[in-house]
Image (cartoon, rainbow over all chains, first blue to last red):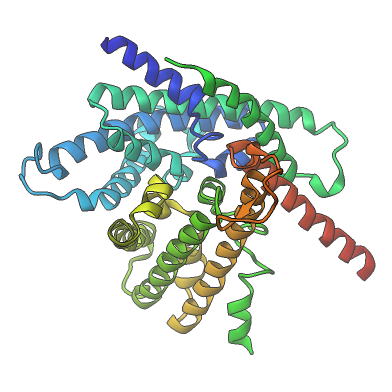
Length: 200
Length: 201
């Protein structure tokens, strides 16, 4: 029972409600960092990592500090949700950046420039808020964070692959750059629409 | 005259959506109907205006190194206010916009204007800039929503425009429609720009 729900969350976040092209979260990096495959991979890895950490931390903060029934203060602080979440994500990203820089310089070189961008990636705050809205428990929140990140990476890589090929294509002058990227995204969204028939 | 320029630059010349490609997530997600679009535009404009005012007032007290967290804190406070007010007075709209109200915090237009404009200019200019950018964003989102609602349901603002024999193009209000609409609109704008350059040269 427990396992089937987790499975539903994984498939749901990666395919059916893909964060980028069905929920429209994290479009800026999706359009901005999808010109090359290797930078797309770096960004994707960074996002998976931060989303998982953010889901964990914000769930703990919400349930132990803000929610009236379970919090250690016993008062209703849920109106502080947005502020605490965005601040904890910003602190988290900064902290992760410092730790990686000290412990794994090679990884830092690969991810370094993408980490600061992630603070303002709405997919990270989005997954934290969705975990709370859907009333997921601790394990489900973490799983949702990981699979949302995987879904993001999947479409980012697909997009980067297509756009690398597109360099050699004869695109009409007015559609070059961003417009054609959006139209490709539209085609991908059409394909992903097929998953919405899945019933788990 | 210069002040007028600050006000109007956000509407066409530096339109945050079509020219700078900022704030795309709420733009595409909430443009399924014109009603939602107006709500989103108004909420974002309010937050942009208030945060620009506060940030331009306190910019001299903020240490340079931690300015981004401070900006985010100011923006998040106003987003919380908007969230609670909308929840109380327009619950249906609040429900439709869903998580995109708290997500105004990470809207790149607002943080972008705080960093690029309000942190460097005085209050008066910041107010004009915020209004211009807010109106630019609102107009863009209403434009996209009008196209999508018209094609997807045959109605605008829930008033039927086309006869009932029109078969709605449902795909326009589904996610792919949003991508196609903005892609084609940006292409159209590029085309007009190219033509202008040709005739100018």
